[in-house]
Image (tube, rainbow, N blue to C red; front, side, top):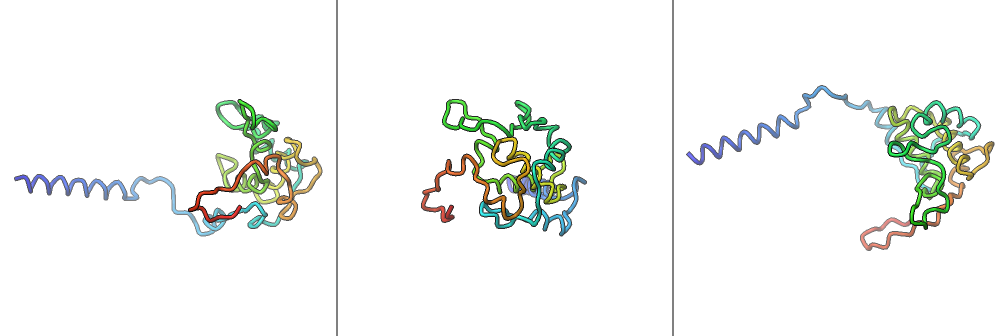
Length: 181
């Protein structure tokens, strides 16, 4: 009797696991190869992986207002408790109330590009062409006082932007981490 009960429970658990893993929910779809290729990018601090393109803060202001301001407000100040500020906080990291923004915390401008390119706008990522991403990055960097309004960003100039906190990170000294930074 115990064997029969044990076998029945085992079979029920097996069936439940198989059912739970079966793709029968009707949600989503399989990504197309070109969608996978588009998302399969890595942009490094030295600019490796950046696409060809260009933009400036003049163009970026219109893009930011139409694609980003809804969440981050018109001047990148964010919406407290909902969406992070992108501007401000420079010099605050050593205080009791650090403000982590693109201008105060992020060490590389290429990382800003990579994040916007991969994940923004939040409700429809991957829709911005490279020129729009370069322009949005330029506008955000301009709002932080890092570059001028007419300064052009492209795959060569973006890695040269010196972010205020570039030297604020230290190499990982754990012996199992082999990556040089």
